[in-house]
Image 1 (tube, helix red, strand yellow):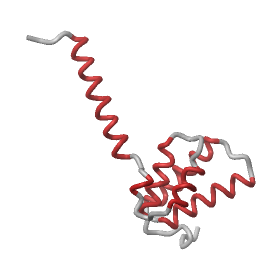
Image 2: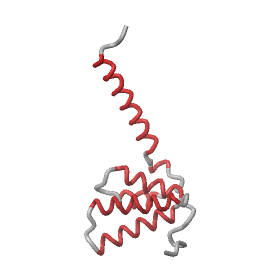
Image 3: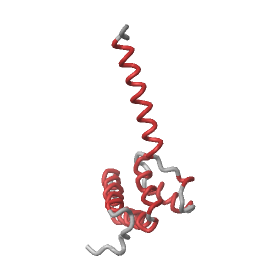
Image 4: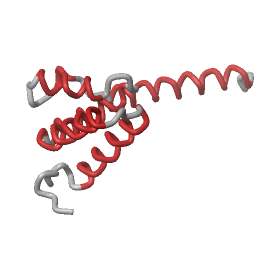
Length: 117
């Protein structure tokens, strides 16, 4: 016997929500799990991503786990831009995503300081 359509939709939505929660937990950066054991770095990451959705601190935190130097370079760049100009949240968000993606593209093995042009 077939289930009513509304019951099937409800079960389907519940399964999708559960899968989404699992994905978010898997992708979340927990500062206490940081391999670097640097509370100052975690504080800097939270400061740079303050006012943004937690996803952006997670993205930057994952870069810090792989390449601490690149994460510090991104943080110092954004802080320098903050003092020079009033950065919008959108621009700060785009900088975090762009520079983190660039670092991940090279498997976090290429340092930003070694990169020429």
